[in-house]
Image (cartoon, rainbow, N blue to C red; front, top):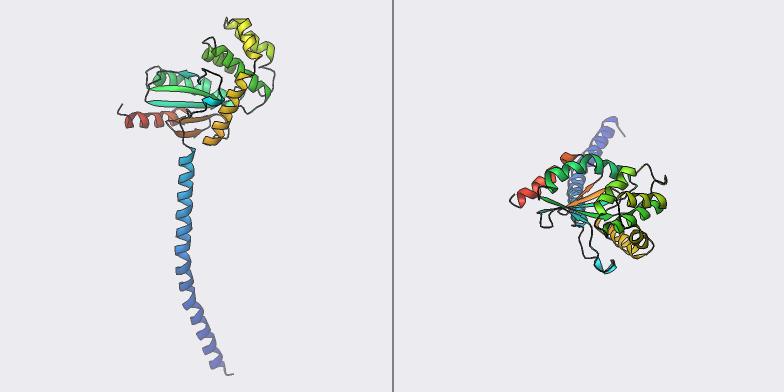
Length: 240
């Protein structure tokens, strides 16, 4: 085969390859676009599915007459649901650094109502502390006891929420101690904690703290500005 003929064969082969290449890319591009769009739609649907006010009907698992602790105007246009664990260090950061400002600017002014739900993540002390707070709530002292727990928190499994210490917090709050102890010795709030945990998982909560602001989920102890931006948006949507 002559040199000229070999060059002609190679050139012809190269042209055929180049002719096929654009066609392959053109046929692949729509596929990539379709997959990307489908993925985006699925992601969007998943985010929407995480939304929830946190006040879904789980009363069937609750003791008679029980409702989740609430602070602020029940008719406030913005519902701020807190999912937390009393031993969670990031929950304490939110409670001590961010929540006071949210209360001052939005809860105390009637714009936001707070709803508390336990998402027990850290074992026995978390469970016992949550039950103790609910028992204090039977004497209209849930939020005061809640504050005392976070102030006393000092690490997971540290003994900060041992039985004697939980009793001491109740004494410091001047609660009816026999009634408090009787409440602790019953199992009724185990159903509340189980119902809350199940509801949280169903709504997409995977760790603490987690929040729903009129159904918009926020994960973690974010700065005040993150929460304020969502609250302001919801207030604007409500005409306030």
